[in-house]
Length: 271
Image (tube, rainbow, N blue to C red; front, side):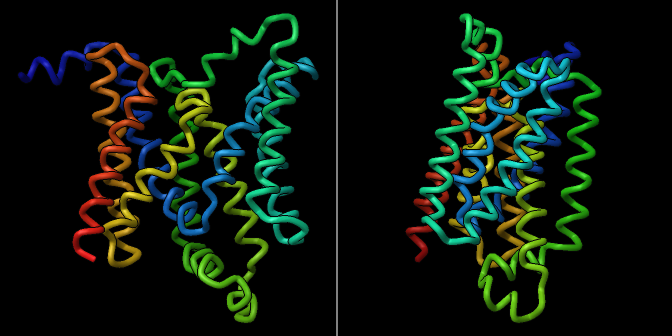
């Protein structure tokens, strides 16, 4: 039995993947709480789709590292969506859907030119087993930045999510908080895309937080349960995917989905 749980530690790629999961999962658990609270599920999904366009722009410009173009495009994409949402010219879900559809269509059109999309298809489901030590360090820096942001800005951001007008009347930097959170989400999504996958990254952001919301009675429990569910799904999803030879990202999402439906049933019973 012990050998069953330690066999995977013999391989460096599994050690790296395990370290990445220990960083990515609490990061997603923390950010996911505010994404769910602010009803930004479509927003984070659109950011994931915009990654293809960012990569396509880098390819067109001849950039050696398309990660930079991907992050820059996601940042501009997030800020532009925020600005248009505040203008109130159309419903938020409509704006996000339009931008998401346009960006992914443009990205697919460029990357598929000449039948070359196959080299980018791995981005759809991700491959956390390919992560390197340097990339793990980048994720650790993002987690540290997120924690600092949460410590100093959570109260203001939470007030904005509850009642934007009231927060503004209290002289809170509403627009700054919204833009900083959008940029942080954009950075996290784009940096994690290649290991998590475009198709499922939004699920990993939403499911643990949504599950935590089903059973939490206060904000502390909300954050705690979200991180616990995210880490649990990440670790067991990685192990099960290793022993079943299945893609890691989808298996993690399956665990997170089971947790969500379990907490939903439990929450509905105690209400």
